[in-house]
Length: 122
Image (cartoon, rainbow, N blue to C red; front, side):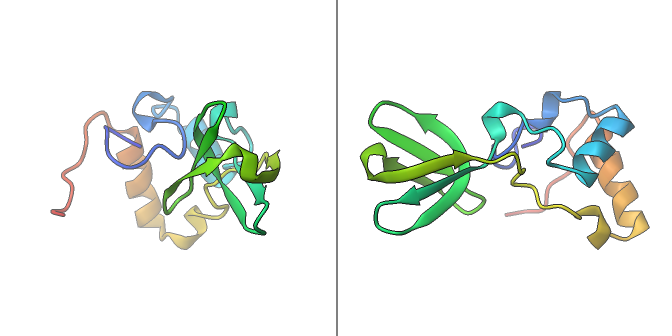
C-alpha cells in the first residue's frame, strides 16, 4: 500500500524508509531478506485437504482471516490441521529483472517521491 492505495499485504510504504535507495533496492531485490513479523507468509493445511497461504490480517479465538494476493478468507480455527509461518515474503523474487532499465528508474523514482502520481481512471 502506498498513499492509501492498494492492499495491505506488506508494510504501508507511505511511512517506510523510501528515501533510502539502499533500503528500496534491498527490499526489491531480496524481498525475503527482512520480512516483518506481521507480514510473514503463513501456510495453512486444512482438515478438508486444502492448503492456503497468505498473511494473517485478523485473528481471534474462533477465526483467522488470511489475506492472499487475490482475496481475504476467514477460516474457522477448528478446521485448521496445521499452520506454519514461513520466512519467505509474498513479494516474488526477481521483480526488477522483468523491467527495463527505464522502468526500474521510474519505479524507484515513484517509490522515493513524496506525492502520489496521478492514477489511471478505474
